[in-house]
Length: 404
Image 1 (cartoon, rainbow, N blue to C red):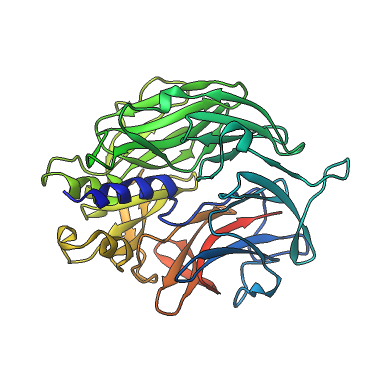
Image 2: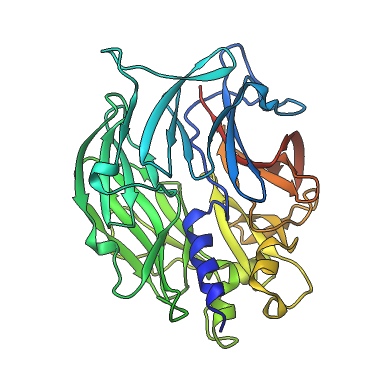
């Protein structure tokens, strides 16, 4: 077994929805066509041989021909960017500093507090110097950062821009294994996050699907829900009062790490808020529904559907180098209706690598098509079985979100 496969397994699980991308917040209503009050955030990642940088642009509609970077604000390549309550927040992965921005015209400008000071603070004092995808806004006074490096949750105030408390989360730790989490979401009084564990040095992983759950109103861990019917949780979304977890075996890497047939197929599980286990009466075999043995992650919008990528290539994935499996154009978008157990391949979007990401904006699925040779990416809206092309941007489209 190649140890680099497990490293890829953990990285895919920790940053999806998507491999090298990020998922933004959708905090508004209205259509993406745009009105005089609409504002959308588009973050693109531009890579060079030695570094990478993120460029945040503000547009009044997603129905534009291209993204002009001349008015964009540049962030470091390790930064995360989120929208909440009509403002934009950056999380600097090099310094641990959180900064709040407002929109001025077509640009982002650093916000100020009521006392005139800069709207920023650092999480370095509680041991956070680099950010991952585990950020959740609960209210104007309460937000979480789930710190898997130190197994704690940092509670902070998006209005006052300061840390209000921290609480330990030892339930997220597995001895001798590193933890990787997916995007954090909220349902009622619960904050939830898919989580996986692996040990790169031993090329092993914990063979369960799991969901970490926290109280949204109190500084407490509700628990970690586990199930051995499938492996490696990569995505979780709320739908009709329940939480659904996609366990994709690390996008197939868990299967590749083991003997053929020893890892259960990717599946969809259901958690009823407040229960101590996943619903034993709910199980969807995603390999059977999709018609392929390898799928990766998922993005749901609450209507009984989600989109994910399928490995549709005829090339045996066990014959590929890890970087070839990640970067090769082997993955194609599909729409799953898990109430009808149907899968529809979105043929209008060309197959791509696992750097692809996705977002739900105004209850619509948006995903990028990345042209590696041209150094550009194109935004598509998926409405099964079709896809509508929106704009093209230099670099990789990293975040698409409504600001207001």
